[in-house]
Length: 507
Image (tube, rainbow, N blue to C red):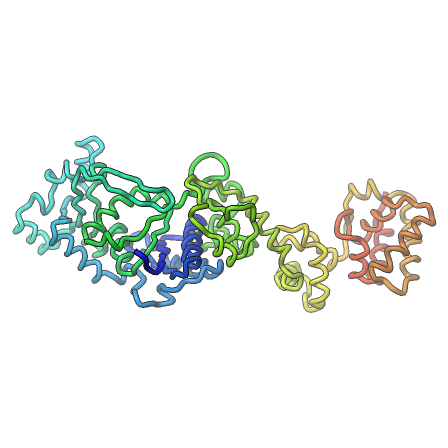
């Protein structure tokens, strides 16, 4: 059946959005945009005990920062709302009643203590066709007793009645057709009277159907629930309009086995959340944004964790990712989370950024180090950034590579002193000052041949003189091209630094 592509990302507001969830949202978004479809953000807050204040806002802010735009949702509105499951109680009640009336579900009154006792009694206990008739439910109790228990306020759940011995076929766009016999499934709880809310299983089926979702793209951890969902679609008579499943591979630890966790990030020093998370009264968790990653770099990095464009292309904009995205090039196996590759992507995107734009991002870093940013022109800052950005992975790295443009060195690298500063160096540097003072044009292009010509005429060692020159001006023997540095610093500041070095450096 040909119908408009409509996908949904449906996180629970139980904490910060994990980077694995971000990748799921991204793949939904890429697929929707590639096929001219809609992207729905649905908040699954049916588990009231796990609700965390601020989590829903965090989810919206994270997607917005990454450029994953939502067509319908709690904030955006739409024709299929409400988009928060806790606001859809009346809708779910209708469908719970439908299943009960059609004999597809039943009411169970078993208490937690009774269930625990049954688990102790029966090895590998499962509430299913083989055990349900020994439990306290509407299949075993007279209707009058069932009605009385409900009227007296006894808590209950509604369970899906799974018929055993049925081969359930799950058609997955990524994994192909998977057949599972219903006998291995238990009678899942679909609704709980305690909070008048459905569980994940019922709410998702109802919402996906009513919101006309065409493709359910989610992590492979939900694959075991797919047969149950197929049976629920059948029970409602919705098989012909059921969405196409896509179960994505897990993001795996950078080392060892198992899926990526926050502990891995803490242990190896990388974020696992898109934005910094500030839990109430808890420990702050780092985020990609606050760690200095560009959203475009994060998107590009995540897209290639489990998918490839069919060629060796690595750097791709969002539009390019959309045009190339195809589940045919998506892996079925888990993808190791190579955080160093994430750093590389950020480096590459910083190199592509115009110097003037990067200079704007550098201003807060300068201010944080006590530099009066207003004292420098935008042109000057852009030129500084252009000279050093090839060495950085994050904007904050600019300070380490460019601080000498703003603060004269007050100490000098001891190893460089030992290697590059001799008894003759003060005399040679004094001569260099005279050469520099004699220049009318202090640009890099004009100053370089003059200084190099002087070194050659004097018969001095080029490396020793130039490194001593750099040590005096920069404080260490590294950095961009020396004459590009002096052009930006200007003659007066350059000479002043050499004079200070002659005075301060002792051997």
